[in-house]
Length: 330
Image 1: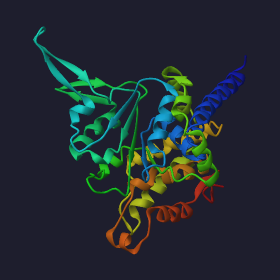
Image 2: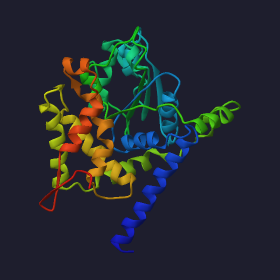
Image 3: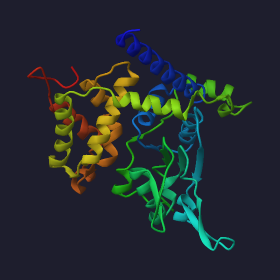
Image 4: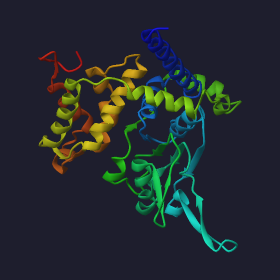
């Protein structure tokens, strides 16, 4: 078999695995293919996902459905005001038999961690996730404990229930590769939901389609996706434009540009390509950047949204191809 044939076989296997995950999620969450695709993209890009929307639209359902497609260790944390950092990361307990401290791992030691209503925990507890999400490890009593591989945090929060919540600070939001909203289903999807969800739990129909080894192979495949120099320059130009915009108080961080690049590579791979095009960057840019950009107070009061500002930035930045300036996304 030639190298080209081997690549084609790997490509077909990759696409088949992605489609099985998307089909499993679609069987649980009707009419939300684009949301499921973004969640899969973040998983393959080794990122973390923040699901922000009003109550009852299926945020936790989406998180659980994605988690159940992977035959790995899955833990769920219900964030509450009295939750302590040790309830997340674990604690050292003195063992009288050995006269030493034994480390008892917390629920963060899992392949996929579902953090429900993350903004209901105090800032102290939220900060327990900072090292976990960035360095994929936990440091307790000067000892570093590596987290499982792969590792992903899927957190949910409600944007309108502000009483008794602790808004995520910029450093915590920046750890999430993407923030997405599930949104209300369309009319037919809602009718189908009333029919299919009343007799059984839809999650009971979801079974693992990949093991952790196969998921690592997909992640490694995404890393091989080619990114040209013009695409890298395009991504940097987007980031710098957000920082230099007069209406922006806090622009995209260097970490966010790295994550935008990884997300674009995963988008290309899911689309069946081994190279990134401008549309891959544009299609995922809102999910990756909007929650990281902070408008100045005057712009906020004027009613302008980050989405529209980012739209104008994306429309104004060309991407070079073969030495020519062309419209971004062409």
